[in-house]
Amino acid sequence: MNILIIEDENAAARRLEKLVSEVAPDAQVLDRLDSVENAVLWLKSNPAPDLILLDIHLADGSSFEIFQHVQVSSPIVFTTAYDEYALQAFKENTIDYLLKPIKVGDLEAAFKKYNRLFPPADTDYKRLSDALMNNGGAHYLRRMLVRFSNSFRLVDMSDVGYFYTKDKITFMVVKSSGKRFPADYPLEKLESMLDPGQFFRINRQFIININAIKEMHPYSKSRVKVDLDPACDLETVVSTERSSDFKKWLVGEKV
Image (cartoon, rainbow, N blue to C red; front, side, top):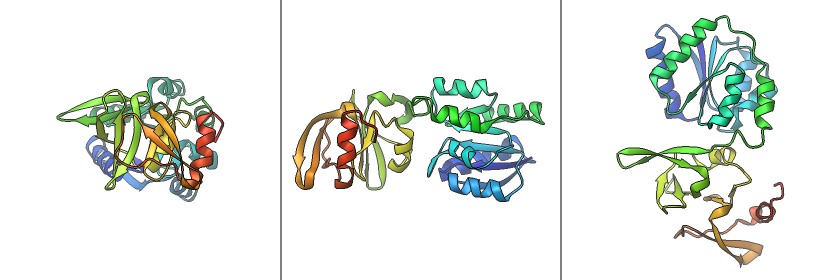
């Protein structure tokens, strides 16, 4: 079996390749790709793999964009952090999916399903892509698993006040408790994962939830200073280039 891995988190891609070697030792991983652009170029210039392990959110956008540019005939196992509502779309289209963090048993079950269905029935991935990308926000991240002491905690995105970066680490601040946790994704990736009606990137360092805005104040160069709840010691000023879109976002206009 020839397998293509499309996953933009290097550690996750390495772990997935290791799991593949455990579950299907005779399988060959043809390549590991990290973006929509690279995936489209690869699929256009190489024979179709037997199976594609595909992350939903890639470095340069949603993986559903791949199906807008190239016809994909290979069966796909999606790896995703989607909520149950969005997962129903995959079930209805007989596409398998694995929730992160991926467990070896789940991957093994997916490979068994692949073997049962081989050769797989044709699936219209472009139609699924169109449906999900226009499904009223169903494709946005709803929850995130975070490490808390020696355990894990599931945090609902509606309870996240804001994300910010410091010393090259991304942190998530929970509104109800005021606690902060390291987040698994950089702000660049979170921008495409979060509901734009709820979250806005005010500058290079912050993505904020509209419900975390306590007060706003005029600032120099027509900018806006935002007071957040929970409070933050770092300066939270909307950048000049984002100020116009920020004001539209506040009143619910499309940005």
